[in-house]
Image (cartoon, rainbow, N blue to C red):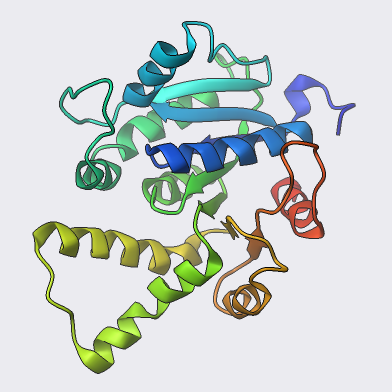
Length: 244
């Protein structure tokens, strides 16, 4: 893929949940895809973008011609720039505030008259950034979901409705109910993605990944090594899927 011209490169837009561990996992995946010749647009919220600039310097996110950073607003009121945002507030923003600006960003990046980028060919979104699925469907762009958790954790969430059906709901307060519903919706809508990536190794969770492969469209283990560029057959399969 190194022989591709810039305009011909497949273009993957990566959007993590705006939380530190989620951003880190998505950034590692983005770097791996970039090393395989993909043009990358990495999307942060304006809040996290400013935190990066404050921590690492004003030029830290200048990127490369084929690895660019963009921002969208999260719609939340101003908060302490040196503190992690409230988890419930972030989840509500993902659900209520971010579809419209994300949709506008995709249209701008794919505007042939004004954009200098190749058109976005795939979206890789965090498993709880479900607005990306909605936007992808509206604009005809395939969406792959990255869950920065183990396959076993996802399987537990996926089985929770069966537990509730048999034993009933455990007592929960308001915010706990909301977070539970966010997690539940993410497992349900995972079926709408063209592929689902888990932050794990196939050798470590073979049985669970094989079981999930019967439930989801395509299951991948994100087990490539960002430090030396090596990759597994599973990651190679993901690359082929994004090129198809």
